[in-house]
Amino acid sequence: MKIYLSPSNQDANTYSYGSTNECDQCNRIAEACEKALQRCGFEVKRAPKGQDMQKSIGESNAYNPYLHICIHTNAGGGSGPLVMVHQKDNRRMQYATPIYNALYNLAGRGKGYGVRLDTEISGNLAELKNTNALGVYCECEFHDDKNLAKWIIDNAQNIGEAICKGVCEGEGVPYIAPEQPSGDVFYRVQVGAFNDKANAENMVQSLKADGFDSFITEVQKEK
Image 1 (tube, rainbow, N blue to C red):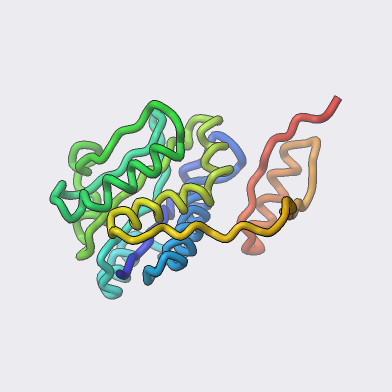
Image 2 (tube, rainbow, N blue to C red; image 1 turned 135 degrees about the vertical axis):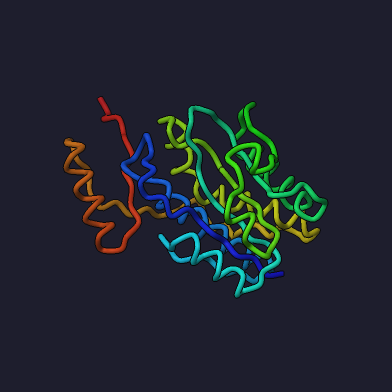
């Protein structure tokens, strides 16, 4: 089955944590989701980072996938995932419901908004109305709360895997988990540590200008 992934291009939607934005983090999620879906046997095309929505719609229709999955994060003071569809027919709900459930279960919190019609939330969404594929629009979590924004950043890989799990359940195929590295060793790369947040933000912007996804995490100093 062919799937088109359309991550948010909304770089003006800033996060309440980490000097990052919706575009950056949704592209991290989409990249993880793409790898997971390919690992599970799906054919995937992912929109380039920052691509105009109308171009993504045209690219999706030319690719002719069965599913068109939009990946976004939300704002407005809530918490928990939301999945939207343009119609609640059986074919769309076959995938939308397990994708929502996987996102909800990952969050591990009691709140969420279920699977809703786009017209109930924000009117007709172009990527659901104008794409030929079955459209599923994921609002993975709210980024205007500091704790939730940090959770998104820390769990981008897991969110991508959760969307894949939902697709696998909807399609009735096994989800194949990523291989775990042998032993208890894993590796991180850190560019620098700063006492002044402004210096950290300048480093992030410099890295982004060079094409490297980057973000800030706060660490309490040991006493």
